Amino acid sequence: MRIEHTMSHVSRRLVLLLIIIQTVWAPIVAHATSCIDNYSLQPVMDDGEAIPPLTSISNFDHVKSQEMLDEYVRQSNDVLQKGLAKLRAMDPAFDPSVISLQPARKKVVVKNGTEKYKASYLELKINGSKISPKAKSRVAAYLRRLARLHPDMRVYLSPIVNKSMGTYGFFDPSLTTELALFLDETSVKNFTLDQPFDDTILHEGRHLAYEDSRRRGLPPTVYDYGLETANGKRASYLEGYEDYLSFEEFYSWFRDLMSAILDLRDPSLGVDIAKKLEEIDSILESLEALVVDRKETGIIVFRQKLKKADIADVTVRITKKSGVEVTVGDYSLSNLHPNVINKFKSIAHTTEGKKQVVAYFLDDLNKFEKAMLGARKDLPDVREALEDLKAFEGTPAQIREYAAEFEQYVHWVNRHFDGLRN
Ligand SMILES: [Zn+2]
Image (cartoon, rainbow, N blue to C red; front, side, top):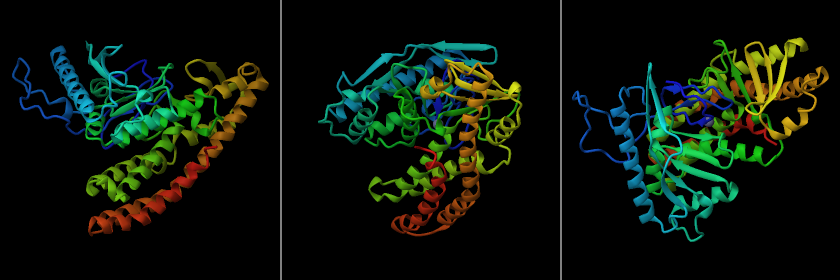
């Protein structure tokens, strides 16, 4: 299954499948989901085959008929209708100006071999900037706070579109009039239970914040880059990010690790310790795939190639889609920040201009590679501390206390990447 013309940042968790999106932004992966509502009657197809409920699946790889997709649309719409009713009952702040159930502008498309199925679906749209200060639920207060920082933020609860891409959630930077987050039924469930601090929304919220700072023209950082590879060359060894990896993804993953640990440490959140440790393990595994597992990540390969390349073999382009893009062989590094585009747009076509772009990119690549190598050296200690923590037997309070040491290790590794912000 391949999704085209979608630019997304995606949340990857636990296991999973992925679909690559061939654009400036990152691809997609998903995580296992939990049920918001159990369907007492499991739908069956005409041929008698049971359809696994929407809430138990993480992608549409098994969808092989229009009828099946229609059934999932029905379930997705149902989840949203029930979610809307619960949210309205939970908090008067979720009035019709804030939250609305509406037909999505696009159709959901599922490809299976040569077959293609399409369907219209509903999405629940939340405009956090319209939430009244009197909001009483945690989720309303949280969304209002986020919207205060990012007034253009709109949250779309949209299980069907996430399943179609195999994601838990994604940020879509192609919608330029708003900062659009698309979240699945796990977030619907968390919202209706008044548990807003779902890690998917936090992760995608970080992508949103970076994009917002670019749109506002705040100073560029090394996190504005993305590396795209072609012809089987790898951007990274993280599943779902083989062909494209944004640098802010690294930062977001480290922050995910940190926020999962802080959740574990905070007794007021009442997290399930075993589940949280599993989640921490899974995030750490992804970071290991990004930073530790292979010597030759795309970023290191590309820096070497760019450093050695004859200027005549380097292509510099400026496009609306990719911003400033430097290509050497099968690797392209692009920077979408408007300040970077403005800096180079009048000179990028000259040899002298090209040299300046390459020098600018190399400088940031050096910083990034140094941070990666630092983290590569330190991450095994984090792994060891996590294994200790997992093996530790004690009361929840004792485990939380024991986790303090682990938290320090993670802070220590984070420092490598934190220093790359402004
Ligand atoms: Zn991401």
